[in-house]
Image (cartoon, rainbow, N blue to C red; front, side, top):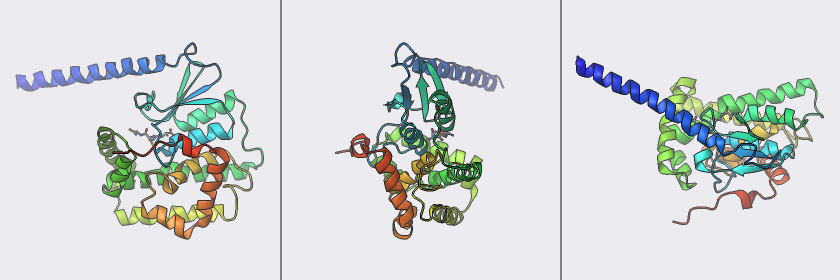
Length: 281
Ligand SMILES: N[C@@H](CCC(=O)N[C@@H](CS)C(=O)NCC(=O)O)C(=O)O
């Protein structure tokens, strides 16, 4: 009986010590980006390390970087592994004049106010609402279809991430964590065949929405194009490129492929330079 109490006390102390240390580490991380240490009015965008194929294998990181470029906001990209995960334990996050914001959407909202950005002036409220729903489809549904293929079902997904040069310990941790998270979110409880069918339907939906448009709402981009591109680029050039989803896009939906190329060419003329170099070993 007493040994159980002893172990429970030790576990409790370890739990609180870990929580305390996490706070200390986070503060240390944030202290590198105070107003005095960073250039004034330049966003420091914290994301993943650069990877071959895409500037970031995270759709949310690529979304934020695309937004920064669409809005012509001056920024520096911080891809150091030790800074990848921010105050909420996720990537991306950003720092500006000593203030820190975590979550791609919150960063976009914050920067939109700070820099008085308006990327949607061409569109009506109804059109903007429609584009927002499309973003939700990517972030709340398609993201989990990606997660299952990449991290949970094993095989080509994990191989693709390792090939990009991601450290093995991080890949192992993320695979374990995403299996847990996908189960809690719900999509991780379904049969693979059902999830795959939904993913193909989602891809078809994007193609139908895009139709002959240059961007999701028409001839000019809107703010939600940043998120849509952040996701689709992963299938075109990122770690999802060996998936069946990517093959379907390339063979069946030329309008999606053309859209991705248009976004890349317009906002990332330096794409090849900023993407990481393949591992030579
Ligand atoms: N809602 C967040 C989602 C960010 C997110 O899920 N990022 C992933 C990388 S794609 C991450 O940090 N995962 C680590 C984890 O969940 O432990 C945003 O928009 O920034």
